[in-house]
Length: 317
Image 1: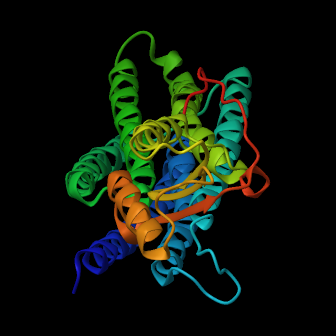
Image 2: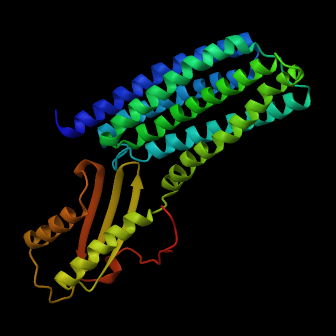
């Protein structure tokens, strides 16, 4: 088994694990939310069920990307990866808005009675379990460098924070019930729900913004600058008249097209000589050959080059 096949095998195994474990969290959270009457715990269960669906979509996407090309998708399945992440971010956003509205409603309607004792045991177990699994996957992905695993693991980070916040707040509520301020305990659950919803917003943004940019075809500035720097060196070395580069990224995959304008008296005329220059440029671009689509063309006529453009240097990736 080559390195890429092994990498994809590990990626799919981790996604399968993630689906199974998140399904356990979803079932447990939903049941516990109903039993205890906690909207915060129920939110965790609903969020986890949605996440199970997204994780299944990620697993299907990982298998599609491994196929590289087909008759219907002749440039590969790379675009499916950011598309799935956009769907994930959108559904999480809907959950966040629902939780925020629900929490505010409970707060204005006099709070919510919750069986904090049972909920605390639930929160302790899953805070430890979610945190442990997050760091386990994070350690593996340091060498794997999978974009799907990276964003999939965001859900475990979010869920760990959800459980930790529920645990801390419910312990505080349980202690509060033993004091003269016990009447405030009914407001703990809706307050936690609102705080959790607000806390999830940055995670949604971390998923939605980069994946939406990729779906829209937003050229990453870092990749553009890297290719431009490489081509500037080759332009000086081989005395090209001009060049135009076009770049795009889908997850870990990079699409790079380079059109090179050569003078009429260009000393390298044979296909073998031009291929040697292509190989040299491709070597400088680096990266895994199966995770990049590089097209390098030579022309003596400017009309066969891609349309030039001005890149806003201040744009972020």
